[in-house]
Image 1 (cartoon, rainbow, N blue to C red):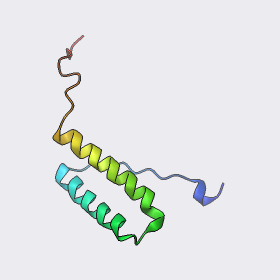
Image 2: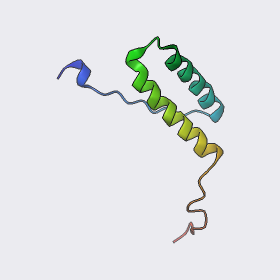
Image 3: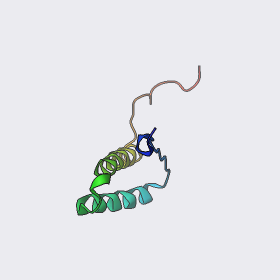
Image 4: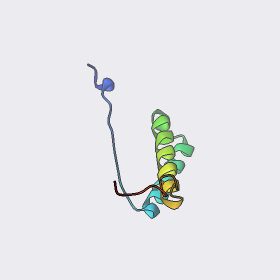
Length: 70
């Protein structure tokens, strides 16, 4: 198996303020075009960060009426 066949995963947790700051950095890096080989990675990071920030700021209400005890 060639080195390029391996996949690296990174799961990072941070406060929302840091998430917004990281999103700003990723946006700037992607917009710069300086790292074309990472464009897809930047796009995935943008999606994940936007989704995570949105969930924290606008928690889904599905399941809110469900009982918590069985």
